[in-house]
Amino acid sequence: MDDLDSTASLLRPLLVSKTRAKLLSLFLNNPGKIFYVRELVRAVGEQINAVRAELARLEKAGMVSSEARANRKFFGFRKDYVFQAELAKIIAKASGLGGEIIHERNRLGKIKFAALTNGFIWRRSVGPADVDLLVVGNVVLPQLAALVKKAEDTIGREVNYTVMNEDEFTFRKRRKDPFVSGILERIGVVLIGDEEELVR
Image (cartoon, rainbow, N blue to C red; front, side, top):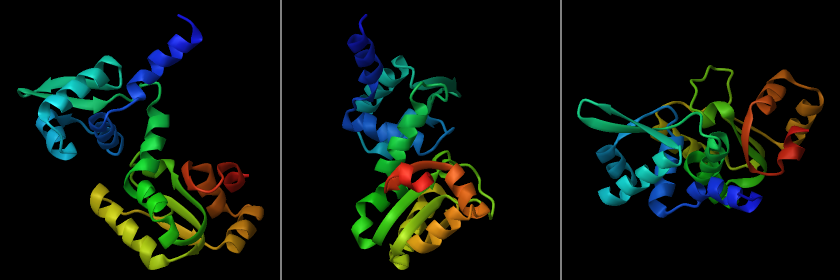
């Protein structure tokens, strides 16, 4: 098998149908959670045969695993799937809070950077000092707060976010402020702005 064939076989499961895209979004926005087939059908709003066909493809590709429990077959995304981290970042940009921020960026003000931390992407429980979302720029705060509230209602936990203007962010980053440095060390995906410029 030459390099192109090898690459094609690895990427084929990622070239998605609408149903597969919805399933991947559901699985990766709920890391560690397992679903039974009818639950998945209701959540993605697609026909049961289409969902079953995609689950079979995803399982064959090693992306999801299944297990039988009490006469039901449950499916969950595999933590050891080779592209799990990269897919989770794509999903974080395409859906949920990340997707909303990208879609609504013009209504949110003049944003230099917006980024989600790994804790948010992997839905880890947060403490008061943990930040899920960093936004830098001149931000329309009520608009951002509405998007955050919507995300909180969806994921069932508080979303901690911090907003700074560019001058404050640059000053604190240059001073190696522990709060800002801690956020930058945990950046999972940059939604708006240049990642290299954000973290350097």
